[in-house]
Length: 258
Image 1 (cartoon, rainbow, N blue to C red):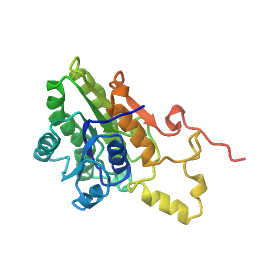
Image 2: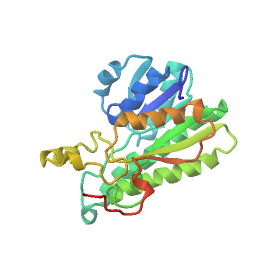
Image 3: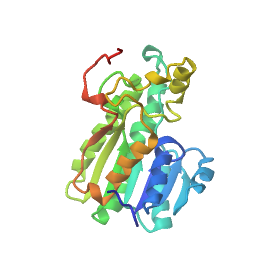
Image 4: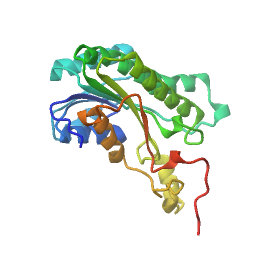
């Protein structure tokens, strides 16, 4: 069972969806949490969580802001025991052949380079104490095709590669690096699709392509993220763990309609 009592944790993208659910669960499990988001209005959202929590506005694609984020956690809570590098953006539904280099650069800056910067600027604190956990949000879209746009999928495949590689760059340091790979989760990022299907009266079809026959909730990803941040996951390292109702267990498949 995950227990984060006394842990000092940074969570990026903490204003909504998976990030907010993870911040909520982490403080419930006893962690001190630095909730980070690019949205300045997230401060009020963080204040609503009952626990030892502070807020900081950060654009994770800006290195100086990520450096300041790590320093703020140390100054506020006395150290860093883990980070959930969760901040990300979607591709906005832009068709592949209409995507531009600028579009790709923005997606990669937040989703991939942002993860790299979070690891780069927290790992020194963790390696110095010979202990810590880094968790990153990837996606089932980074595992195979047809779960997201090309730019988004490539950015999340990059996260998986960074996690695998970083776990070996931190060989013997006592620091673990893992990724969660959410499937179809109802968040602000996927809300357009959910709203469209509900408007068409097709809500019952959402998630039927996986053997669990439903979509997931942010709290279900938060459970895995907090587990990986905890000592209960002490032998889990370099992994990209799919939390997708079984979707990635199969090749393309037509679900029974009878």
